[in-house]
Amino acid sequence: MLSTDLRDNILVVRVEEKRIDASKAPAFKDEMTRCIDSGQNQIVLDLSYVDFVDSSGLGALVSCLKRLGPRGSLAVAGATGAVSRLFTLTRMDRVFVLHPNVDAAVEQLSA
Amino acid sequence: MLSTDLRDNILVVRVEEKRIDASKAPAFKDEMTRCIDSGQNQIVLDLSYVDFVDSSGLGALVSCLKRLGPRGSLAVAGATGAVSRLFTLTRMDRVFVLHPNVDAAVEQLSA
Amino acid sequence: MVSSISLSIDSDLDKVSLLARAVRALCEDLLGPDDQDAVELSLVEAINNVIKHGYHGERGKDVQVAVGLQADQVVIEVIDHAPPMPAQVLDKAPEDTFAFDEADLADIPEGGMGLALIRMNMDEVEYHSGDSENRLRMVKRIAPRSQ
Amino acid sequence: MVSSISLSIDSDLDKVSLLARAVRALCEDLLGPDDQDAVELSLVEAINNVIKHGYHGERGKDVQVAVGLQADQVVIEVIDHAPPMPAQVLDKAPEDTFAFDEADLADIPEGGMGLALIRMNMDEVEYHSGDSENRLRMVKRIAPRSQ
Ligand SMILES: Nc1ncnc2c1ncn2[C@@H]1O[C@H](COP(=O)(O)OP(=O)(O)O)[C@@H](O)[C@H]1O
Ligand SMILES: Nc1ncnc2c1ncn2[C@@H]1O[C@H](COP(=O)(O)OP(=O)(O)O)[C@@H](O)[C@H]1O
Image (cartoon, rainbow over all chains, first blue to last red; front, side, top):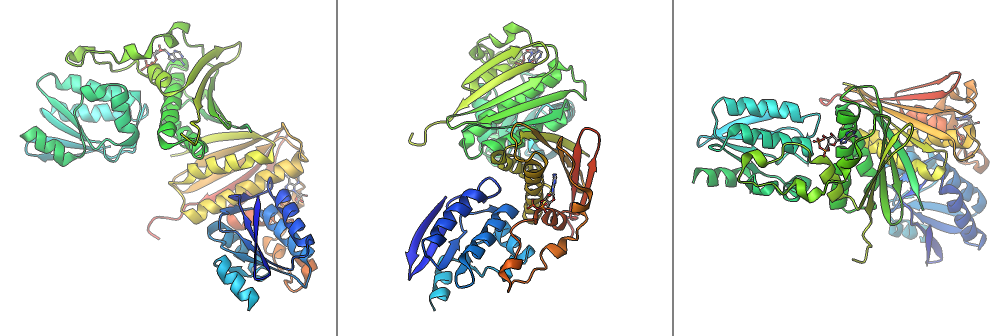
C-alpha cells in the first residue's frame, strides 16, 4: 500500500490506498515500521491520494512517530478535505507538520 | 411535479422531478391527463431535468399518448443518459419522437 | 475478493429510490455508467414488482437487497417474503414485449415491461422461491479493463 | 417526511467502507461535504468499535445501520448484538482526549480517540442497550439553506 522514493536523503512515502482505516491501519503501520527500521530518519508521508483516515489510521501514524523517536521527523504532505480536517480536529496538526505537497515538505526539511 | 409553458400554441410540459418511477408515475399521469383534457393537442414533454425513468414512468407516458389519441402529438425533448437509453431499448423511440431540446421540438412541431 | 452488504426498506414505493442510490454508489468503482444504469433499472423494477405484486402495495413488509461485489461480477439479490411470483412470467422472451406495432396505438404496452427490462439489462437472472423467502438473483458481469 | 433504510454487514473490518460509501451517498442531497465527512467518520468509528470491542474481532456477527433522512436532520443508528459498551466510556469529555502535550511524545494518543471523534462530529449521541441489542443513535442536524 506504500510506494517510496528517496529525495535529498529524505524518504518520501506515498500511500497508494484511498482509505487508511481500521482494516488497513495494521498493514500501513507494518510497512511504515519497515521503512523506519531500515534507518530512515526524515520521512515525508504523501497523503494526496488518501481521502479518508479514521482514528485507527491516525493512531498508526502516531505510533510511527514514536518509533521514529525524538531525533527523527515525520512530515505529512498533501492532506486535504476530511483528512486535513481530522488533523486539525484532533490537534494532531501540532504533532505532524502539514505541507500542501511533497515538494514543499522536502524543501523545508532539507533547508 | 410539472410546469407548463405555451409556445406557438404548443404546450411545453417540463418535469421538475429527478425520477419518474413507480412512486411518482401516478401523479405524473394525473397532471399530464389534466393538461390533455384541457384541450391541448400538441405537447412537448421536457425531460432534461429527469435522470431516471422506470417502466411505470414509461407506461404512464404511453397512457398519456393513448389519451391524446391519434390526432394529438406527444414529443419528448432533452432525454439523455439512462432515460434516452430506456426509449431505445424498449423501442419506444419509434413511438415518441425524441428531440435534443425543447427549442428543436417546438420548431419541428410548428413547421 | 467478495464483499457483501445487505440493505432493506419496508415495502413503500417512496423508499425504492434510496435503495437505488445506495446500490449505485456501491457499484461505482466496478461498473461504468451504462452498467450502473442497467443495475439501477433492474433493481428498481425488481423491487417495484415485489411491492406491487408480491405484497399488493401493502406497507410495512420487508424488502431486502444483498449486494455482492466480486472481481468479475456484481451480484444483486432481491429477497422478499411474499407469495412467490408465478413461474412462467419470467420465461416469456423479453424481445416479444417490445415487438409491438407502433402504428397501432392500442398495441403499445403500458405495463408488463419490468421483467423484460431486467432480463435485457442483466447478464444472468434466476428466481428461487423457498419455504420462507423468494430470491431474485441478478448478475452483471464486469467488462475487463483492457476492452 | 421521514425516509429510512437499513443496511447491514457482518463483523468484518474490510466491509466497513461499503457501509460508509452507501450511507454517504444517501446523505448526499441533504448534507454539505463537511457534514457528510462528519457522518462518515462517526459511522466508521462506531462500527469499528462494535467489531473490535463488542465482537472482539470475531467475524460473522451482524452489524446493522439504520439511516433516517428527515427534513431537518439525519439520524444514524448503529445496532449490534454484542455485550454492551461500559456506560462511563461515553461520558468522558471529548476535549480531554486531545488535550495532550505535543512536546511529550509519550503523551500523544495512539488510540482511544473514536468516541471523542463521534461526539465532536455529531450533534446528538445517545447509547441504549436493551435485552437483545445495543443501539448507538447519532444525529446530524441539517443547516437551514438560508444560512
Ligand atoms: N414479485 C412478483 N410477485 C408476483 N407476481 C409478479 C412479481 N413480479 C412480476 N409478477 C407478475 O408478472 C407480471 C409482469 O411483471 P412486469 O414485467 O414487471 O410488469 P408489470 O409489473 O408492469 O406488470 C406482473 O404483472 C405480475 O403479474
Ligand atoms: N461497542 C463497544 N463495545 C464495548 N466497548 C466499547 C465499545 N466502543 C467503545 N468501547 C470501549 O471504549 C474504549 C474507547 O473507545 P474509542 O474512543 O472508540 O477508542 P479505541 O477504540 O481506539 O479504544 C474502547 O477501548 C473500549 O474499551
